[in-house]
Length: 466
Ligand code: SAH
Ligand code: SF4
Ligand code: F3S
Image 1 (spheres, rainbow, N blue to C red):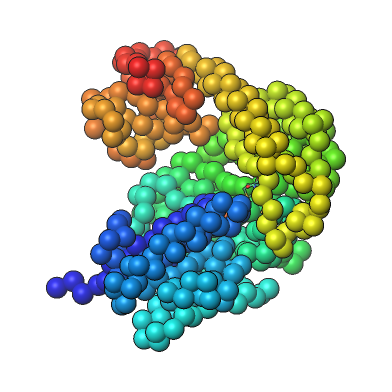
Image 2 (tube, rainbow, N blue to C red):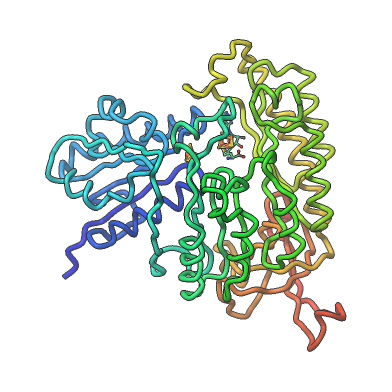
């Protein structure tokens, strides 16, 4: 008889949190099976994000809603993890006394012991100690859980940059790189289990290794080369990078490594040098544009995406116009854009020349409209072009419809009557473009046709267009 308890995890925030949730699942696997419904769970972990005020509110509102569940089932264990947990610590327990455990990102490795204590103790536990000397322990993922073909691999944690708007250095601590051997061993292990694609994660992967002593240091470009050389791995991605640290060596990887996907998420935040300076981003728009041009030189088909903040304190109409001008110049394949949110203790909270809520909203609407048009135009440029896709699965919407992801990170839908395997690589020619996806036809390869460029397609039309 299965005596294991049921665990439900709700994850907010970035891929770091996704990966941490996977780790938590694995750490608790001896005592808990995972359920995808909160109803009937014996333990609930809310893995929180505090990047913007709204994200924090979402976490609190879910945790608040669990109060009733705890009253009905006093044996239920409720844990808050992630960035809000780290930031709030004991304060969270006074606000939410029904929470049993508050655990920060560096402490998740203690979860089995913390869970056992939380069950017995009957009063809240706070595990948010954070050490400058903390090391992510070597940790081999179990392959039964999670995607069988693509995985995240955390290569470092924390951030030293202190962009003035950002909470991350306060929640995730200083930059600590994992040992290159540990990262490579983890990817070998994944590849041996059939994983085809890995995404290397860090808040600023470009500064990977900088916390190691010179001489014993592996830089990010060198780590990428080691990972790409692993047999069985077909695609390598990474995220994210601060443009100030984007080196020529890393750009060269885009020319040399076929497995490195032609997609670069390069958050710009603002098109105005005055604002970038006040954000402490430590690059100018001229330098940024120069790097964009060079990247395109190294890999002409590279798709660029970005993050933009509007309404940073002191942002004038001219500064905002500079952001609009920048998006015209770069023509991003897609972009995330946000209203500035004040995040104490981040430094910009003390900047007093705030932009009104209405102004922020109207700037965001103007920017998003333009970004949408550019994404559509960019997507249309793929019509008639051939792309290689990694099959993600059969579409839930329609029979015989499949979905895959291109190296450029586009979702492409296509019809196929064959049974395809998630993780398999297929070739398509793009026929239609929508805002969030492309529509393609499978190419049936003739022998030797890849070089000669001869291919035949099967037909279909875009469901988004109907
Ligand atoms: N490490 C990444 C950013 C991670 S946070 C980098 O430096 O590029 C993801 C995005 O959230 C940021 O790029 C930024 O656009 C946005 N963001 C961060 N703090 C914010 C704040 N206080 N208000 C609004 N958006 C914010
Ligand atoms: Fe935040 Fe800046 Fe670090 Fe990115 S680089 S996590 S925006 S402080
Ligand atoms: Fe959010 Fe923390 Fe990630 S604040 S974006 S979960 S690093």
